[in-house]
Image (cartoon, rainbow, N blue to C red; front, side, top):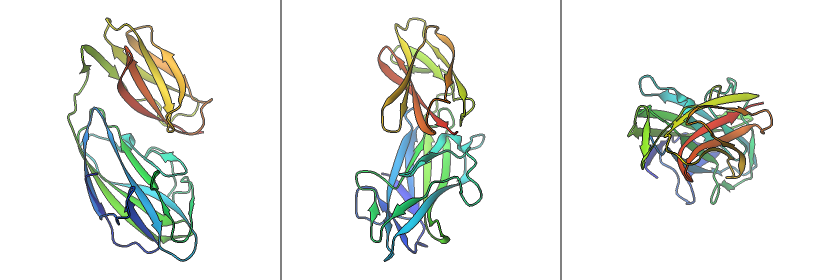
Length: 247
């Protein structure tokens, strides 16, 4: 984990570095390779003497010029969210998570996981993540994460001897259907799109017969939540994009 920043305004809650007993700092900087993406996880402790119900919200502080926050996703134990979702001014669209007195949510799991898959948009992304009491939003703790994204390729990418392109989904979030464009070398023996859920289970596989085109995916049959779509060429995962399904 790189350096990350947290605020000291915590009352009932404290962010904890994932898998440790260390109180989180006020801010962290995470170096991200645009071709690989990255994530950072935090645990959350309830310091109060009674059980609490909390939500987590994401606030975009700054972005690289010309970039959007739609490739930055965050997850709680309840669900995953993208900035493009309409969550409401009080984050009514975010699910509540219950936490007992003195409990730490995390350890082998997490209370908060942020994930960035930037593609070709490099630079500094600064976002804040706030855990707050669902019944008293002023009771909160905040951490700032600065993503330093480098190594953008701008266009066709090479991995080994294979050239490929995998676009973002449109629309994303999706309700009933979505499309994704792809290109790969005509010398490719086999190419498929594999869609996985956040538990790593395969939910859909699409065989690609043409070396350039698009795949239309029926999302009405998928449960609401976050999915990962990977372009697999000759058995190798060469690119992954995120898809949010929102019914």
